[in-house]
Image (cartoon, rainbow over all chains, first blue to last red; front, side):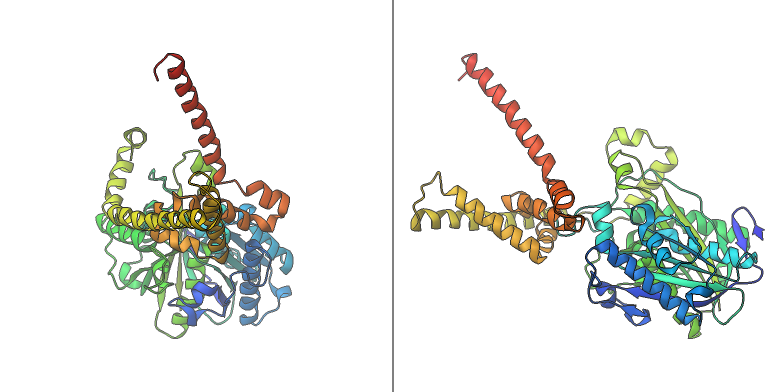
Length: 333
Length: 159
């Protein structure tokens, strides 16, 4: 059911019956390592290219999520997924392996919540008994495509971010045990004219703020009803900007409740500049860390706002600015 | 940001960019300059040492010793790139590692390594000069322009 301008309320409250987070070597050393289902110490995952390694990450996340849901892959009715590699090959090739009816998505790093929102919509509208939503990113594959070769010696500015190597997947179903998806706010594309591809946090912060404002306006939920409000991958710089911008717009989220997956995922002493980024940043933190905390009873209701920068290496070279988007999903235990 | 770029922005965008700028960490330019000076200086000192070595122990003079010196530096740079720590040195040293010949060797070897997964012809061959290519193109072109200017001045009896 639509509420307000851009928010879906899921009356049946679809259940996340299984979720999984898979990570790479840098994530294994990170702050949330214990909440991952599977961690790899090899950036290549035994494959002969980074792209194949990313596909492997996504396949493992999907298989683990399906297994944790107590299902077989034949039981899953729809699969929706997105990633950062050109023509979303990690997703499509995973769909090839799984053989589940598939819808490919592209929302850059907002793909995790875009997928979860759409899977919940399918399930809530009774067009599916269950659906699988997934996303992935790979540090070296993303660097190769968006920036320079991984071993190239370019000095990065302090506001740059570190793409998470990993994948996250969730099985959403009409019935079962687990956290429930109650609402989703679909974001608008916001472009504040920033064009520095190293400064994603500052570019994406206004999109996150726009979606957060829309969510509270449409749902009428008060900030105090959430135990945690987490942005996807704004990093330290973007998160600070988003917090200040929200205050300016009259939404004051207490510091202890307002966090960012890109800040949480790594330890402070890891050389990740302003924090984590990439599709897997919000996906692994939500499907691994947040859902574990919800199951342990530490969190009752959370809002995850996955942020995405919708640029391409070509649009940046053609001097286009960076359009950004954010999708918010509200989950409760 | 340049004024021309700024003119295309709406007042809201300009206002936001100022708002964001105030919250971004500044690039530590002075620190980067000092580090670049130190690391660039160290690389050049090593080069000078090699130069002296080839002149003293081998049959090279001041003019020809440059060739084996550059070859050794390129070899070291490619070795460090392949072992995966040249980029870490570069993050610390910035322009100090980029400006000497080691930086140039790194651009080519890193691109070649990166695209090996697409095969030796289309991958390595096609992408090796992805970053170094523009340097060669404009290096040769500016040398051409400078040569034309120099010849013209000489022709006019200037030198």
